[in-house]
Length: 157
Image 1 (cartoon, one colour):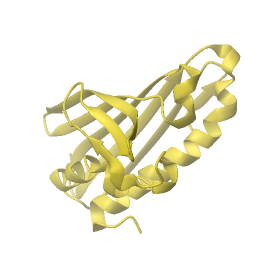
Image 2 (cartoon, one colour; image 1 turned 180 degrees about the vertical axis):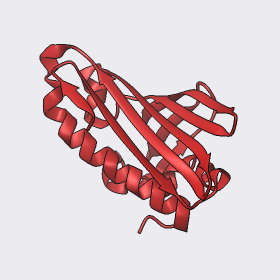
Image 3 (cartoon, helix red, strand yellow; image 1 turned 135 degrees about the horizontal axis):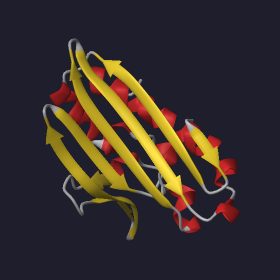
Image 4 (cartoon, helix red, strand yellow; image 1 turned 30 degrees about the vertical axis):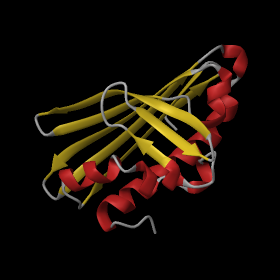
């Protein structure tokens, strides 16, 4: 975790993979294939979908129920760098009324792709966000690892 206080926290991760940028982008946009089912409402990540365009829903639907995990606010490619950004108060943060911005940036490098993730969350300081930040960090770092493994091998294991 990069920083945490009562009213905000920032989680950042970065790694380099051997997967080419296009393969890494395809993997990133298939959240239902790499996100852990343990961190869904339905218990099955295959029920998640993402419409990769501004305003697109990162949604999960099952048995007549649904949840919007986030809304796509940026899909951009510039000079080979690709960015996908969500407005997303994930999981239990949703009911706290906080603002969360989750950004993935993919940058080509000599032997593959540099993958960066950042998650900025802000809300009322009385929420004590620094107390929930370690749990959110643990969950997001797990997902980041799964994304990296999926992008390079096609498997989260």
